[in-house]
Every structure is written in structure tokens, then in C-alpha cells.
Length: 144
Image (tube, rainbow, N blue to C red; front, side, top):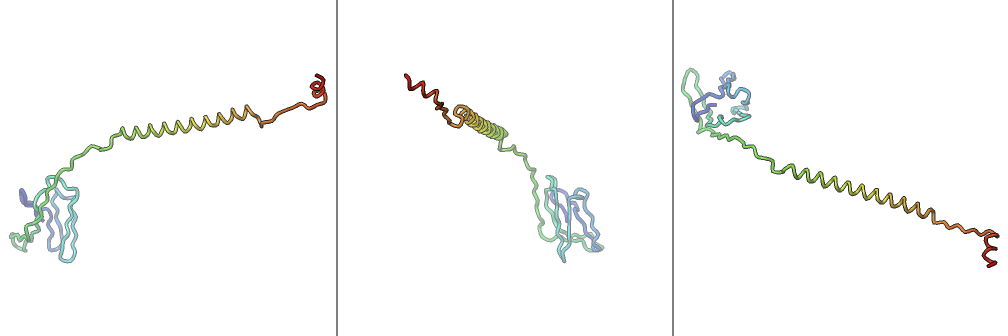
């Protein structure tokens, strides 16, 4: 595999004995595998200076002649720009405050209802009326 865009550079060399040599710039970022008569090359963690035209070439034994198949593959790597988070933290703060206020209101309503129930029970304990129906109290009302 040759990189030919700016300056010709051998990225991967695989000999007929399947011994491979990888360019130091791609040492930890290039993987290849052979499947029958096909070689699959994977480049990882691409960088801006990896941009270029990559061509598969064959070198014949005892020759310095390169035979390239096709025009190659052009790769243009752009840096990814960091974009600011669209959602601001103010929205999260507002949501937390609203939830806290609703919880506080619910708690206050529950306490108010409990207090009202307690006060109502103190005012009218069992709704009982006591009348003294003894003989002495009846006699006082009849003599008048």
C-alpha cells in the first residue's frame, strides 16, 4: 500500500513469504488480513496528515518496477470541530427548582390536611351530648 498524494511513502509492505512491514506513522493504527487472493486493510484513528491517495502496488521479484492497479483511493481527513452543547444547564436547574417547589407544595398540603383533621377531631369528640336525667335535676325544672 503506497501513499502518493504529496510524497510517495510505503505504508504497508507484505512479502511473498507473508512477512509484513508497516510504516512507523501507522504502526498502531493499521490492521490487515488476507482472504484468499484479497487483502483487507483497515486504518484506525485517522489524522489530518493521513490525507492522500492510497494505491495498491506490486513489486516483482528481483525488480524495482512497481505495478499499480487502478487510480487508488483518495482520503481527505478533516478535523472534527467541537461544538458547544445545545442544551444549557439553566434548563436543568429550572426543572430541578420546579420539581422541588411542587414537592414542597405537596408536602405543605398534606401537613395542612393532617392538621385540619386533628383540629376537627378535637372540637367534636365522637359527637356525644351529655344530659343529666337524674330525679333531682328534673324536679328543679318542674317547680318553676
